[in-house]
Image (cartoon, rainbow, N blue to C red; front, side):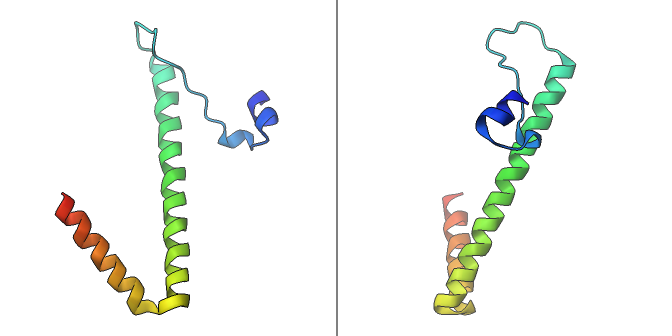
Length: 84
């Protein structure tokens, strides 16, 4: 609650995790919370990337039409497959 108040972010977006730097034994309860926090961070990152991709596609349609978006996505897929 204090972190939420200090930084002005909703308390449901504060994800407490423990630093394992000096821990010798694992604690299942703490591990579960850490994994849940990591999963939530990944969900938020995925949502952010999806929103950015939708904004980019909408911008490209306004500028160059739908064909421009499809061509760019095809080039991105081709580039990604070449790097793999």
